[in-house]
Structures are given as structure tokens and as C-alpha cells.
Amino acid sequence: MKRIALIFDMDGVIYRGNEPIEGAGELVEFLKERGIPFIFLTNNSTRDPAMYREKLLSMGINVPEERIITSGLATRLYMEKHFEPGKVFVIGGEGLWREMKRLGWSVLALEETGTGGWKEVKYVVVGLDPALTYEKLKYGTLAIRNGARFIGTNPDTTYPAEEGLYPGAGAIIAALKASTDVEPLIIGKPNEPAYEVAVERLKRIGPFDEIWMVGDRLDTDIAFAKRFGMKAIMVLTGVSNLDDIGESPVKPDLVLPSVRELLDYLRTKLGEGNEHPGTP
Ligand SMILES: [Mg+2]
Image 1 (cartoon, rainbow, N blue to C red):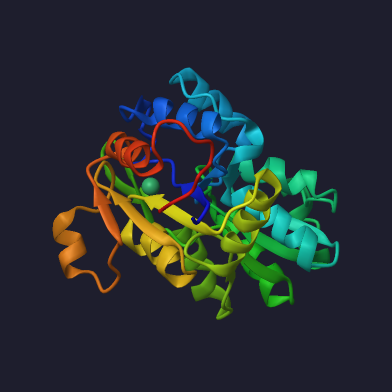
Image 2: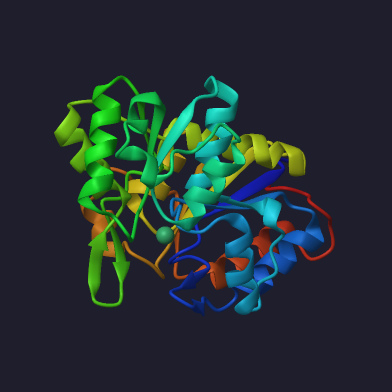
């Protein structure tokens, strides 16, 4: 029998805005009781894992911080492992700033950019920045054109919010791509760096033979699952719907209304009694 591990997207899967999806907290408790390795993996870099833990706790969902991977954390872990230390210029939100400071490689302060500080920058790391300015794009452009490595946290060009679709990290990355003619390395789903970081974390939690990826977006979550041989489970509580699946070249392996039905599915598949018996 195969032992499973799960990766969950968060927004549109576990909650919507500040509202938990029914069954999400129960599912988390079920997985913890059974000792089934799982992590939460989000392309959002504006919060760090500690901030997400607080958000989840406020909705009654108790997930340890080490089970939460943001694209900002994934970017830090990937850079630590693969790149030489060097000065970082950040275009991003609070979560990304925190992660980049944790690198300990020195982060260029905005005040230093105007005094030529951008010339020493080795990495320009770009995520969703709610306080984006022309100055940031200008110095990001100058640094990349000066040879700094161009890294993006995630490719999402938009994200769903109250008034409709807002510009995402991918839109800011696209601006810098246009002004530099340089292709960025993009860390988040559906790309390889996110997979590498997620699998390494899952392995630290416990043994498994296969991974199930649970998400709401075809172009990130489901594409990510299919690209790396994970079982692709799509829930209909978020961005993509059944019509989108019909039109999409990427198809999930299983479609469920929500995580509530995933919990029912796991209970049936795994039986009530065993600890981590895996899939039949
Ligand atoms: Mg989502």
C-alpha cells in the first residue's frame, strides 16, 4: 500500500478571504491524528509562515508554522541552497522582506538606492508589493541591467479580491521583464523550485510514497501536480470551475466540491482505525 503525503494550496482551498472553508479544520486534525505528512504551500509572499499561522488560528485551524511554506520562504530556502551570498534588493510585501532579511546577506534599504547602492545588488527579488512605486521599478531595472540575478516569487499575474482581480506578483515581474529584457527565475507553483522545497519539507515530516496536491487553480496548482507526477485534486471553492476544466489542457485526477468531501474520501479510503496506512 502506498503511503501518501499531501500539499494544500491555501486561498480558495482552506479559506476564502477570512472565512474558513467548512471541514478544513477537521481535515487538518484528521491528518495530524493519522500522522499523514502534509504541508500548506501558497504562492502568496506578502505574509510569512508565522503570519499565516496566526491567520489560520483565528479561523480555528491549528497548523504548525513549519508546515506552512510561502513563496517568500521557498525563495529564501532556494537561494540559500543554490546561490552565493550577495546583496538583495526586494520589491515585495512584509512577508518577503522578513524572509530576505533572514537570509542574512544584507538587504538594500530603499534610501540607499539613490546613492548608487543598486550597483552592489546581486539579486533583485520580486513579489507582490502593495506599496509598489516607480522608484522601486527603476532601481530594480538598473540593478538587473547591471547584472543582478532577477528572481520572482510566483507567476500569478492576478489574484482574486473583493472588487475583482487585482494585479499579482506576475504583473510586477512582467514590468521588470519589459524594462530589462531578462527572463526571471520564478520560484512558486507550478515551477520546479517550489516542488524541490516542498518535497524537502515533507521528507522532514515523515515517509511517503506519493504526493497528492490539493488546489483550486488549474494554471498553478493542477499544472504543478501534473508536471511533477503528483495526484492532482481540484476543489471547486476557489478560482477555477467545472467549465474551466473543460477548456483547460491540464486536467485534474479528481474533482471534489470542497475539502469537506476530501475528508470523507480519505476516511473511506483509509478506513477509520489505521495510522497512516496510505492509499489502496
Ligand atoms: Mg488558491
